[in-house]
View 1 (tube, rainbow, N blue to C red):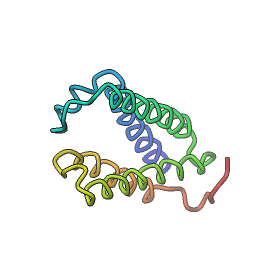
View 2: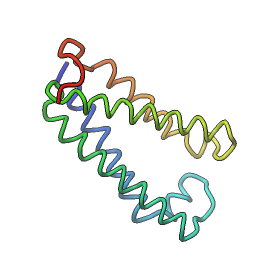
View 3: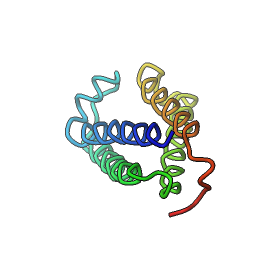
Length: 130
């Protein structure tokens, strides 16, 4: 069970790193991929900042994946990270800021990984240990 959690955390973080790098280096192409308008320079800056935050979070998730039983706080961080992404995407969809064809893949990724993290969480190990 712990091995599965390690793999889930590493894969989730790797996706986050790749996405973060794309946000930093190819925001124009990402806008095309997600059927969005061409970003302004300021939107490129905001996208790069969010990409950097994704990378930083993902690096810590990978470090915690080495021993998730000892790093349950970071496992919870990854779970909360996924839940907040889902909430933000659902909110943006509800407000009409984006369409499902623009954010559907991200929504599904975060739902799947958030669920997997909860399923494989080491419940017997307790919560909140550093």
